[in-house]
Image (cartoon, rainbow, N blue to C red; front, top):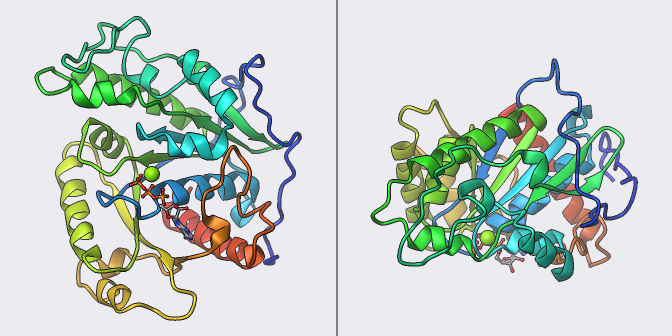
Length: 320
Ligand SMILES: Nc1ncnc2c1ncn2[C@@H]1O[C@H](COP(=O)(O)OP(=O)(O)OP(=O)(O)O)[C@@H](O)[C@H]1O
Ligand SMILES: [Mg+2]
């Protein structure tokens, strides 16, 4: 175990119970700084966005990085709902989906009929309250991790948007994130790999973007695309700081692609120093199990040390 990282014990292993709705909205936040919003995004698929989001959320809530306990929310903003599956078993997941406790309810009203040909823009410009949608995953005396799951039905919003004015949807998302900032120290958002209403609203409401990059052929093109997208979406909404995180890197060598990106005049300065290496202990956690911090797989202690170093650097870079 690395010095200075004391693991925190959950007061119960998996706190979630569908009959026990989370109610922590009134928790102390007076005097505390507003939470930082960190989007995990790359237009390229399969580069580890969900893996990075899940592990960063876990490590930030389970370990008091830099001696600060944190209230953490992780939002699954991808219709594939892989992040939700990482933390929840199928039964509780489907109960939450049925109760519409997903990101979809932030964007559209409960009673809206989902139609792939026509997006029904909500008449109500106010999203539900955060406490009515999120699910507690871990609970510590002074820190916690909450999850806002996603649903495949989010695809209806993605498919139907062509002719509709999406302003009310964007407004609802923005208001929801504003409430999150008051309730949490860090909010991570896991995005799908596309330019869409989802990635646009996520960027518009974020302070930081972590771009996981697997150093391989064409990776540099993906970064260029991401940087342009970030640039085009930030107008009028303050600044967003990008952080390139090399992911699934070799434990033996530094690849030529990583060297190329690190020495690029625009991309080099925004590369994180630490990289997330390729370890089995990072792959495919399911239903809250198999995460690095509980994993018994080979090299899991080494993987946990690696993850802590990445988490520590990100906290420093973002001031979260
Ligand atoms: N550092 C790592 N070490 C080992 N396996 C990893 C690592 N990062 C990601 N993986 C594995 O790579 C695969 C793709 O990862 P993941 O699903 O997180 O990518 P993604 O960018 O979220 O994909 P998508 O674009 O479909 O949303 C998964 O099987 C995951 O377990
Ligand atoms: Mg993903």
